[in-house]
Image (cartoon, rainbow, N blue to C red; front, side, top):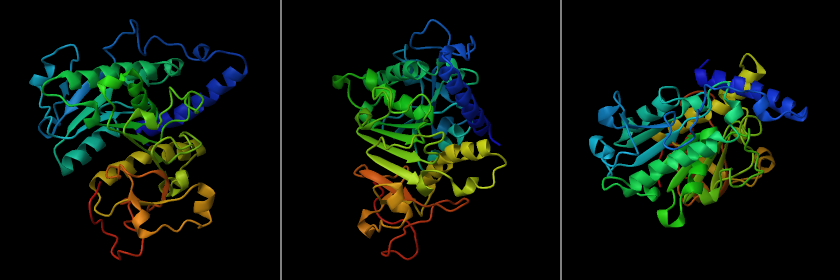
Length: 348
């Protein structure tokens, strides 16, 4: 079992501990107290929230971006002519832990990119739950410094040119970045949220939850909805994979917690495959799960959209998509217009 999956299992277990403690009248910070997570002073930039640039030429030797050094970008291989992806990992993640390396490999296999990994591993490792109430907001603040740095730099790019990809709590952190950008500083181009976590983000505080105001286009993929991931829709386009939970590839896991963790983490292989697949994850519009399950949604061929990297920015509403039980997961076009299931046409 991968390290992120193991952390996800522990995350679910710890969430139960926190919930029980709160019900008993304890404060969350009384449950886990540690000095090994984010340390004072809480100022950006913070030494435990770092930005590493990867390009095709520097895949094995990432370049650190120092937002306090006005010349730092000149000394890197950042190319403003290439698409820029900013990846924010989830609980238990890091720049050298899955899915970060897998995402980089997929992108570089198809083209030239600036890929910036936000490495904040010390903020989301066990047992740092005591900081989870505020550390994502702090992370969003520090990442907003990077966005502003890139916008000001002669070799940089504007916020509208940035594509954020956030997994689990990283999805919410991507949305929180927008809270620290003034209207005149621009708006993020796109946020792709990979199964946004349900813990600490249950829709009670819109300023902390990911929503459609956070970027020009927000697409969300749900695979562990209602368990470790959020059920409610929060993007311009929300994709519920295999109904949003109980992923086929996770059936047969040894324990319930392993199954739940597998559902949550399975979103990353789906998205990674969407970068390179020639078949495509085609999703059909449907208002809700019940209507989808009983087969009342029969989309027209023209209504299907691609889920994942090549999702149309015009997509709106809830979509449902079915995958294979093992890789390759994409099934291709399910409509009547194409018989071979191969991807065709303009991707965006």
